[in-house]
Image 1: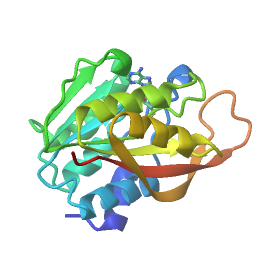
Image 2: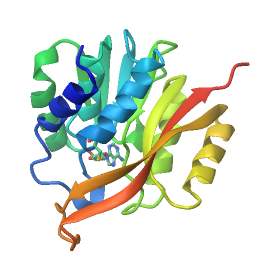
Image 3: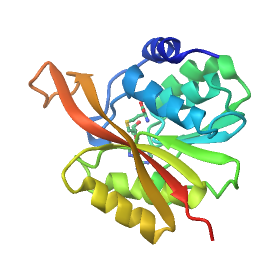
Image 4: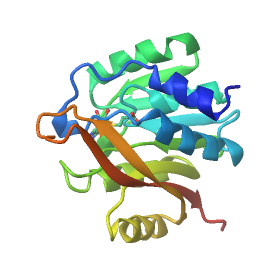
Length: 208
Ligand code: SAH
């Protein structure tokens, strides 16, 4: 079992998107932010022996970290088969423990997996396609009783996410706010390093 620093390093070493697709908001979650959300989920007992669902898995960073921390398996969905190719490479050492599914989260082929599953995801931020993050969240809340998700911070974003959670019978708790530093990858970025705040949020199904 890696400690947090070792996890961060392992995640940083993974293969990145070859040629990221701007429209799909393909940014790999930096190791420090990914390790933060994964360790939080782990310490709450939401990783060990769970099936982790990674929606918009990209290169599979969050699935990989979950498997390192003792998840029983991972289900990874992404719309871009090229990203899934990278994920397959990254996850190779966990052969037999993960499924890669090509599909649109808005028309997801996944069905609820029951009490032992948890979604851990970093969806598109909904900047290129407004509302993309909400589509991911609604889908995640259909699948598993616990959801960990990373969202770009804006003054009203938490209200919107909390409202969606409430409509779906979930409560939302902010784990932390973090700064995401992305090296300039996409054409429209002029600054060399692009920094912005993200919210790490845990959603839990309300007891009935
Ligand atoms: N979760 C990964 C990648 C984040 S980038 C990480 O943490 O590193 C967002 C990912 O969502 C990209 O891989 C993109 O291809 C995927 N994506 C965007 N729109 C999608 C959709 N409608 N359905 C499924 N995946 C989608």
